[in-house]
Amino acid sequence: MNTSTNRTTVKKDFLTNLIDLFTEWSLNWIPDSMVFVLLLTLIVFAMAWGLTAHGPFQLILDYTKGFWALLTFAMQLCLLMITGFVIADSKPVHFLIVKLVDCPKSVNQTIVMYILVAGFVSWLHWGIGLMLGIVMGREIAVRKRGMGLHYPFLVGVIYSMGVLSNGPSQAAQLLVATPGHIMEKVTGIIPLTQTTFSPHLLVTMLILYIGLPIIMLAVKPHKKDSVEISEATVKEFSMVPVEINKEKLRPAERLERSRLLLPIIALGILVSVGNFVWLNGIGRLDLNTLNFAFLGFAMLLHGSSHSFIASVSKGVTTTTGIIIQFPLYAGIFGMISNSGLAQIITDWFISISTARTLPWIVFLYTGIIDFFVPSAGSKFVIEAPYIIPAAQQLGVSIPQILNAYTQGSCWVNMLQPFWALPVLGAMKVRFQDILPYTFITWFWVLLVVSFMFLVWPNGF
Image (cartoon, rainbow, N blue to C red; front, top):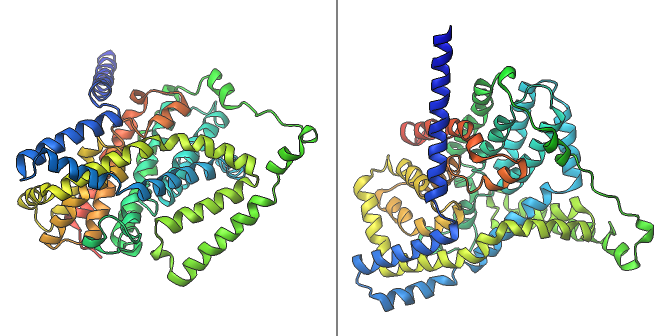
């Protein structure tokens, strides 16, 4: 009996040490995304100088041509992130979250409910899913305290929902569905019916969606081994905001809190979106229409301009990287596409791929690049000039390549802490604490996507 216990302890210690080493390596050697875009600029500059006919001055001009190409796309992504945050931050959504959390009576039921709800919302809009997942996770931790729910496991489940976010709000699919995008001369306009809503990707996402609750329940720590949320954290999460005495407000302040003005504008926006969907179908959604819809819902849910603007102010903090880094990535795009480097990398992809293996290779390659450029929108600007021509030359469906690309981005997020930062900060845990569970999610996605893109790439 003692020997068995010692062996178990050794295994746990080995796993813990391995996770700590991996996390420490990531924190030591994976720089801030701003640092990496600067390093990547120099690397691409050096590659283009050494491999193409363009000299330093020409490459600077190539960089300048591309620099301004993504201003519209950057603003579109900022709105996508802000509106997602603002919807999840509204009182009606929080009220609904509390009602949902109170329904399950056991830990297992709670985990299944959480994954089904947060997973679907993450698929619908990754920004809303991220924020809703955090709010719902905090409520679960507080309201289910005493039931033996291991707190780091819960946070690991929260972050794992990101692998289900390959849905209508993914930047790459929305970009190519929007008229005037940077690759339109190469790809044309590709509607969401061919990418996000393609049967192949929908079945892939459904398998992941159904499998995650089963896998998470299988690895959930037993009650006797669980460490629940601390009393101090419960008090922090349970703080009630101070109510304002409306009778003491000035007339201007009452107007700011009026629940009449904003809903009128919101309803007008939603009528316009409804008309678009009625005439064109949901498969014709583009980035502008989706942003318009979520802006309308955000306004309607908050009701007053005071609440709406306060939430927007908090949501803007999530867009810092996009605002300043997207033009820099656009400059890299300019060097890759204008210097001829794109064709060289395209030829390399073709040399190691076949029509059958290219989507899977793009999935793996994108996952590797995601360690350094953890934004699917930014990364697509870098990869599009060569993965799309490679697909065309090998006769591979471009929508299939786009779906493999976005799944690769969602996949490797489970192993690197960039997108985990909002979750870790809100839930008060370390990345080391949740990595055992997110690694299991990472492995599950690898198995499913490898099967769907290698074994059954044309199953539908």
